[in-house]
Image 1 (cartoon, helix red, strand yellow):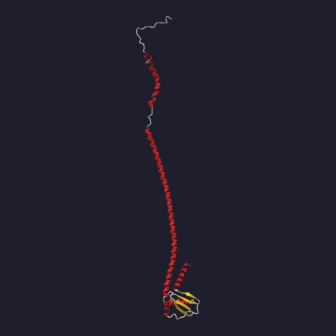
Image 2: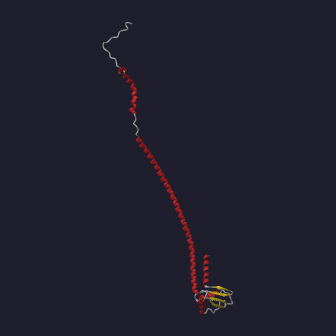
Length: 244
């Protein structure tokens, strides 16, 4: 025991005790290795976000890009709508043109039919008019012939002779004439001759009769041989012949 317990060696130098602050802080040699050995694995992840951080996107560029996309889409839709409208307009225009063409054709067809109907009517009326004109010309010609013949004594005598021949009266007949016609017959001596059938003839001047006409009375009746009556009969005969 005595050999183990030894007295510590004493030094004549004074030792300075550390202050309170120095006692609290650990020695540099003790802390540095711990900081270097323990902090190195954890320091790397902390510094990594700073070195690998991506750049922030430009908000204005995104807005401009979105605007351009919307404008492009709107332009495309507007162009599509414009093309559809143009096609619809063309279709409607073609349909309207076709309808107008059909209406114009129908109107022209109706006009042509009307012209044809009027042409048929004009032809029929023209033929009828030509017939009427022919009757009028023939009638006028006969009237002139009869009129020119009636004003002569021979013409009056022929009319009287023709009329008296149709009267079967053995007792005699009475012939009424215009006074001028009676004078013309008297001047040529035609009043003294009897009728062709031998019946005596009495001549009477009648101012109510026109030149060239006569009325023969006898046998209980009379025969109207006035010129206007003969002309009217001729006209009726011509019209009847035209209608046949």
